[in-house]
Length: 221
Image (cartoon, rainbow, N blue to C red):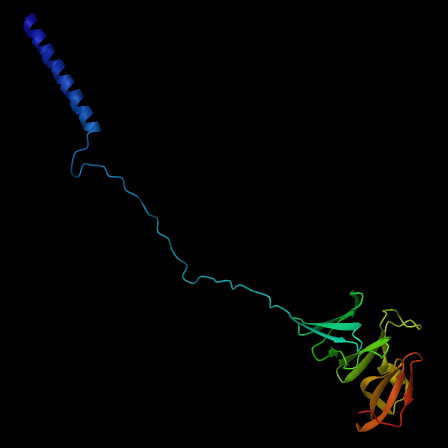
């Protein structure tokens, strides 16, 4: 009886051992075929916009800058005009006076005017002794000639420059200034005129020191 019970216990022990081994193998050994577990990578779909918005790159145009200069007959004085064409169709003029002996630059003034107006350096800009110089400013149909002192000082009557247009209009209404051609002497600026009907008028001297006009018998072309 004890021998039979002992064999039954041994048989039960081996069955338990075999079951444990089978369970371990089932958990750790991958069988071929459909029972293998293969990791799967999931890729999420990416949807492109059907009407992408493109923002254009905005660049500001570079202003066009030109430089013009004129030197006195003796080469001592030089006036420079820097012209800048602005984005809004206006133009900025900056004038600088340079003494070539001392290399000293003296800024005169800067002015911005509309596209229909302009400024320029006349041909015979400096007086014979370099005491004065003048510039031309056109605003619409009105032509202004501006006389400056070369040393940069104001005039005895307080003006930074003398505008010949209003001075001549106060002198006479019979003629209008057509052009200023240059200097007859250190103090006399030659100017031509037109009559009210647009025909040629006489020439005048503009005496800078007295701000007065002197009619001439000879027409200066």
